[in-house]
Image (cartoon, rainbow, N blue to C red):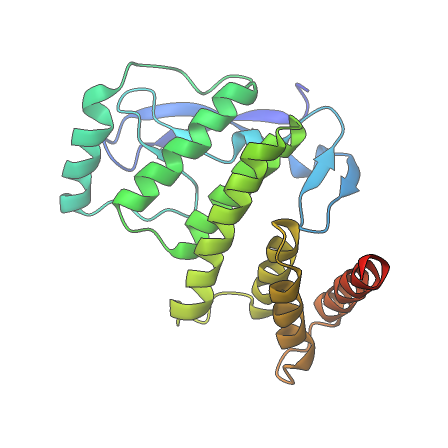
Length: 222
């Protein structure tokens, strides 16, 4: 594991404290399996454990995609997070519980400062993935539903054009399928396949494949 992880120096976006955290050399990872919702299993390590940076001084948790909190948000984070924070070092090799705490704390901080729906959705999806690794289906489903809600907000409200529409439509379909909404999943896959402005053949093929799996399952049970 020592050749996969390295120390990165950071300055907290909230309190400006300088600290170190572990990051992953993705070039050193060995892929075992990729799931249909983009979760990737690697040999020996789960890079999702190191997605979030956690300041050991103030407890502010954030990813590299976060923006710096505005003064009003900073005050609220200090009140709700920092004032209750017991100093803890996340800059070590993380276990499941540390990874889970970091992801949930980042969601909380992100919600307070109004981070983009896509960032919150990604954090929730990664949380579902690490529950999957633990075979905790109940919590996995809970966070897949929460992630889907945020991705739906991205689709409905994000006009920044920074979002990959093909991947977003696929995820809405795939997450709907995984939480038991096969009819809704077909609707999203259909939107992806029929949108003439989408040229991503890989995503279109994936959507068709999942669509056919749903059809076969419905034929088998119907």
